[in-house]
Length: 135
View 1 (tube, one colour):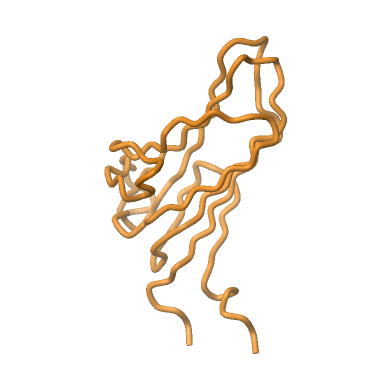
View 2 (cartoon, rainbow, N blue to C red; view 1 turned 90 degrees about the vertical axis):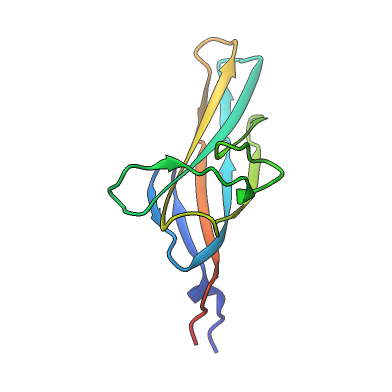
């Protein structure tokens, strides 16, 4: 018998992509920061969550602080968090209040340093919690 996991999750690699979340009620967003170069004095990550009724429509910031009450501001942007080289971060997202299409965009900002960058940063969204699981 095949395990139900294969039919009840969807994985999207990358950032800023339009994702059809139809049927999925929650997600885990993961960020792997990669190597930070340029010797900044600080590095911070913010994650913006937007939604829309159509794939090609105008996306707006999710106003629902229920995305993750511990880390979401009222404007749909996950609170800025300090990050370090090679750090992995996972965020639980409640998508119940979101429209059908979502877009998640991370931004790493730096303070100081010479041409600071985060090389090899990777992002993934795992959709789960299907409203109706396959039989």
